[in-house]
Length: 448
Image (cartoon, rainbow, N blue to C red; front, side, top):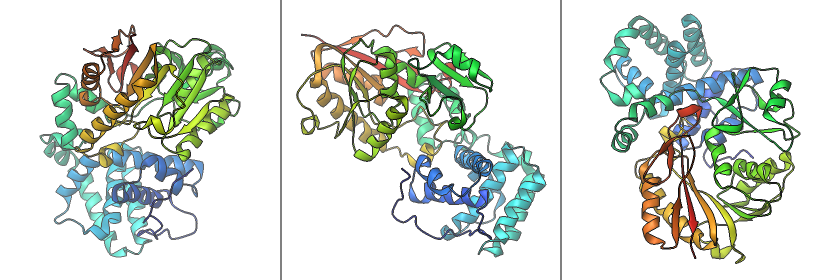
């Protein structure tokens, strides 16, 4: 369910002129919620775009994602165009300018229409005083575009439109691939479906689609659509024929080598994509899906019901399993730990604005506690798959190196796969590699 955060029930500074909310006004409201209040896009967009038609909602999402994806670059361009910065209370006007600049740079909206629509939005607001300034700034950008873009090329933060700390960390971890990762983060991710093999095969589903789609080599249940669309209108959505899931995330269920009737713990399971995939591969599994709250588990339940599967849902803290575990050991554990999400920035560009450098050390500590405390729940001979959607080594191969030193009964198994890059420990997928998001996998087994 959409979440309302404290402090967000305010009247938007740029107020729509009429009862029908304008897509650009709504875009500013979403951006304010993310950048000023720290709300995630996945929460803010459903909450604030309900009044829009499907067409206007798609346009608003394009603007929102574009501004957040290129926020650092757009800010650098705006700084060149303005003699002095706007006051904090006028952040909405600044965001309207960024919307205009983004449209002039990266959309098919004609220049005159972008300028006119942005200026019109300001004129209909309570900040009419800014209309002339907005008009002048956007028209100056059109005249000076090439020179302005050239002026920021020497600034890596503006050029790659990432915070400097992310650039620096990637340069340290991946001296040969950091530019490739940054470029991939700024690209639009493909829409990938995971076909429910208990309902229909990928080949048969392809025949039912009226849209262009193709199979993916790295995930046997995956289909990639050529264009984004409202998936709820696709054949079989209500009947559970498919789920939306990146091909990188689909690797998890394959790697556990699931066998009929096994008892499996899906730890940190929400929203339940991997839970559903495991049951699609082996419907007789006894799956316990655990996550931190009942609210998060509601999403797991909704997804499983649509697919017509069931699992035991348990609310609890993965760092403290004694509070919720019944003492029965598991044959397999899928451990998808909380992480920086640095591998999925292309799908969640708000990560660049919401995540901070000092978050990483805190996340590493949480991951270590979870690994250490969940490991005793695994049977001897069982398998634990450690998963992150991160590209930072501290959360991935360095974490497994640390754990193997702490747990004498833990042995790492080779991952025999073609995807990603083999590391000292586990395999790393970079964003965009083989059309997948950035994921890390390490497979462990328990001796004794």
